[in-house]
Image (cartoon, rainbow, N blue to C red):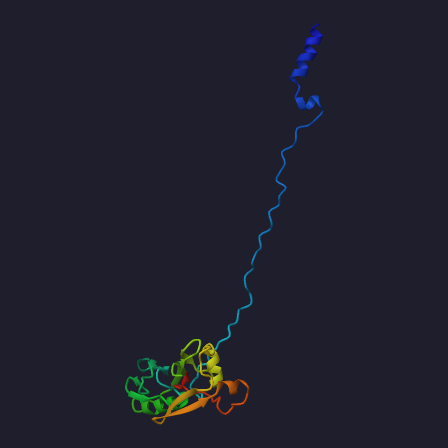
Length: 221
């Protein structure tokens, strides 16, 4: 009798899992693997930007003519008091210590360098002058009328009327394509150059697709 009670007691104390021959499930670790983060490595190749600006002219430039509103840096070696940045005034002149007003507009950087050097010899022994153009604000054209973006455009080298229209956003649907013209002032006189857009895009008006100059006004009625 005691043996039977002992067996019953042992059965009750056994884990249910052992009674049926099952083992408790082991704690499972997460089986979901998180996707590896995309690692953006450092950019090693420098990105290059297309610059619409023309290279700034130096004192050795024999083509660029300084104009009003350009910004220049005039450096005189070992003479900081007469060196520095100067703005070309609307009258075409710059102001410098010792020299007062100096004509700059209409001269190349080299010609202006030589002129300043000659003038400074009265005050400085063997002056060594450098002239750099740091902003070509005079090199611009004006576009008025029926274009996408009327206003001021920087004048790129060899820019034609057709290229200026493109840079200004093209013609609007209301533009009179046959009556476009360029106003140009030279020597105190204003001239008018007609431009037929329809003929130009067909290659039939090369003589009208003139090279623009600084200060030109392109009018699209």
